[in-house]
Length: 158
Ligand code: ADP
Ligand code: MG
Image (cartoon, rainbow, N blue to C red; front, side):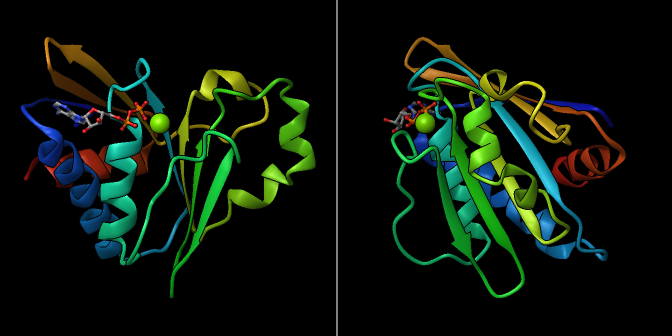
């Protein structure tokens, strides 16, 4: 299965998609890197979904938007999560200075808002998530870009 689409009536539904992703990742038999690109206008819900994921993975506490810091790391027992927001990235080379290559290890989940700003320096996505406004609510499309992405989408749909 390569694509899933859901209507998200409210914020809780967006959080639930993130925690659903976390449930699938936690159950995977082999620990492997996960790279998720998040597309959508400002306010579409990219950070909200990531919050659902980070909490679902076991983080207790705040999940703040990395708008000014570019990346917010979360160190959990088995996993490291890196939440990127590249909206304010002036130059893709900044990512090199941040040591971006170290963020794509087997124990890392990377959720990247505005990935187009990091073209050429980011790892390939397993999942591309598009979030779009539908009046006050949202539509989400999850597209698999790798075998792992397909496995995740298949598991999510069950
Ligand atoms: P982004 O990171 O894409 O800029 P945020 O997640 O920071 O967006 O903000 C999304 C806003 O939209 C929040 O105010 C949140 O409460 C709201 N929101 C999230 N999901 C939904 C939804 N499915 N329906 C309506 N409002 C939502
Ligand atoms: Mg955001």
